[in-house]
Structures are given as structure tokens and as C-alpha cells.
Image 1: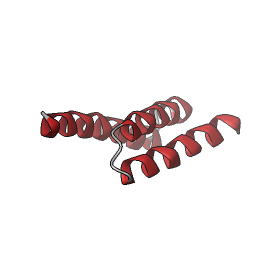
Image 2 (image 1 turned 180 degrees about the vertical axis):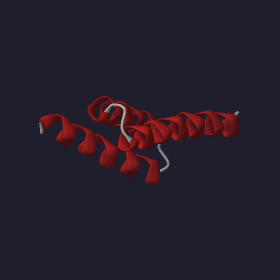
Image 3 (image 1 turned 90 degrees about the vertical axis):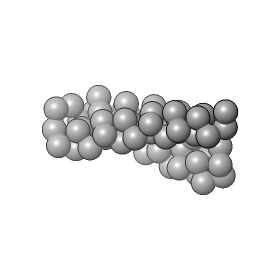
Image 4 (image 1 turned 60 degrees about the horizontal axis):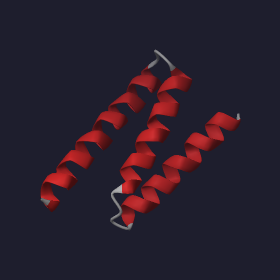
Length: 68
């Protein structure tokens, strides 16, 4: 139960940071996604969080590209 609380908190903190236009939020969100993928394993929910992880990596790349 503690791991799910940590992952949920990280997800919420990451989303709040992203809403404040802070790129670090994507990194926090990615850590949350990695925890969720490890927790759910090879299930549909695990796949969903893996896709969220890919999207957050893509967002960081696009954000950095836009800043350059």
C-alpha cells in the first residue's frame, strides 16, 4: 500500500508542477509511471502506464526542443 501512495503522490505533484510550467514535473511524473509499471507488471494497466511514460519522455524532448 505504501508504494501505491508514493506513486499516486508523485503523479499528483508532477501534474501540479507541469501546470505551473515546470519541466521537472515531467521527470517526477516519469518516476511515478515507472513505479506503476513495476507495480502492475504485464497487465493492461501496466501497459497504460508504460505509454504514459513514453508520452512524458516525448513531452520533455519537445519542451527542450521548443526552448532551444
